[in-house]
Length: 389
Image (cartoon, rainbow, N blue to C red; front, side, top):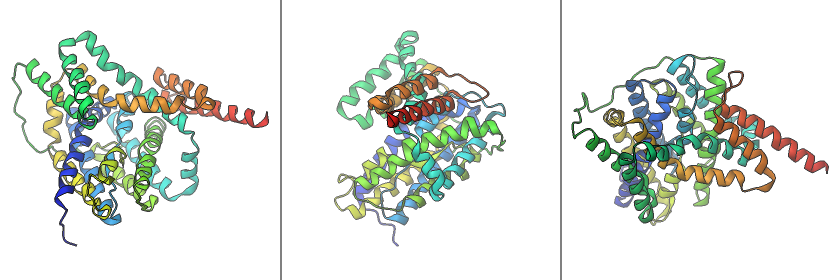
């Protein structure tokens, strides 16, 4: 088959890559740092996360002829950013990444696990995500109090651009953040040692902790907030690819890229909608090219991840936290609304949110795990009592 994408899909793919990459790479870097990655490992992880979603999106879209846009797991990266440092360091985290990918592959083909995952009430899963995001979404306002001259330009840019074009609000905030860092450094930005990022192999260290505190929460939040909505977006635009190969494909990509620091590859929802709507191409049968081109541009951006990560390392922690926080505000608002919208689930969802946001660790299990378990049990008991009444 000749590689001849329509010109309109090339421009759409470029916009998709810009929005997808620059809206969330600060979150990925913070997530990797949160589980022990050093700067070289974080740059490698960012590069392979971009290459993984780019190559996987190209492969799945060409194979299915559907705009199967692929992303890194932004909610998963946010989860890592607030996780406790694994006892085995970044090697333990990488083991968790691999196991989360393996669980995704198993869930795609083994119905008992997919049914178990689907049985988690949506409001409880959304409450866990909101709890994970809560502390990250506070950082822009903490920065506003501590470093207002650096945080205010970022927040104002995000707000003003968001009133004009919401998809470009966060990329604009990233640009504002880069300008703030440059000015704050007195325009003394060192030249990068190399333009192309260097791959760094991380030997995984498998343990029960890696399974319970990294793999299981990462698998659940990625399935519930990325893979399932990604499939729903494709169906909403009239595409009916088989779900199992798509989910298994992103799970396998996660496993292959994890030893180089990439946390999780998943189906996209927002960028999938950008590729699947009529603005992508008038002919629905040609829209898959937008996802293909988006994947190609992701790969190009991934090659320069070292430069991007190196520049981000020059930013004060609260500046990077400000950019990451505004990038997650929309996700937090949506997950909080979905968590508390149903009256029958509201109490259990609130408990899930509060436990997760507390950051507690009991018996070696993270707050996200306890929030999901306790909130899920409360909801199950509540529903059981209602049925008996």
